[in-house]
Image 1 (cartoon, helix red, strand yellow):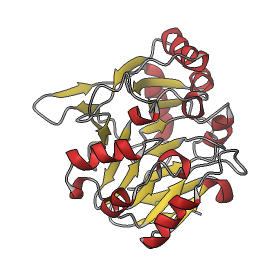
Image 2 (cartoon, one colour; image 1 turned 30 degrees about the vertical axis):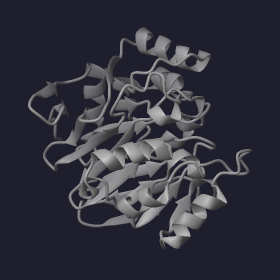
Image 3 (cartoon, rainbow, N blue to C red; image 1 turned 90 degrees about the horizontal axis):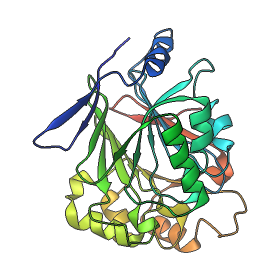
Image 4 (tube, one colour; image 1 turned 90 degrees about the vertical axis):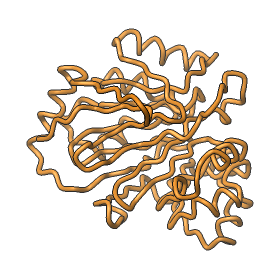
Length: 294
């Protein structure tokens, strides 16, 4: 079993090292030692209906959950990708305060020991956001603010990490979706661009502030469930993914994914998979190649 510390850095010059998060998290990792770990990174786009939730498990056993979808569907979906005896998750990341991204977190906190949670620094005004913050206080979960320049190292030995690309400015007065946390997960030559509900405006900010090499990704999670207000042609051209993922609910009232977005994908010959027809979509990669897990 590997027990490298969780690194959260700001690229330069300082590095913050967080040691063992809680004894409960340690016990979760201890249970993982019963499993034979390979060099595979698992990334699961969970089918939580009309919402987003992404489960990440590094080869060393460290786990991260980005968003939790609406309601409590996420609990049953997590049971499909986590061992039944594992009752801890190291990191939660709430990309923004919309209910279809954070509603499941309070139930997760009731059922799992949590190491820490990242937010975008914008206080929500809804009862859903209030419940989340109450649970964070109740369970004394450490909260950190993610912004451009934050790096979260999930597996130090294999150099698996997440770079936060947005927000890169004060988004306290911006539209909720514009202030979404956007991140890129990297392992060797493979990468995942996770855009949650980011709009074309946010995509433009990222394109202006980053080199094409730091944006290109093997897998792209399309913004805002395939809405026509996300996934612009310039964004798709620079990310240039091998495959796109759409997280949306079957027969949702918004008509996601938009035909405009699907047309943009087709014009650039980008294939896609969607949770609304396929269910949870799981990838595994050893950092050299990537495949969909069956």
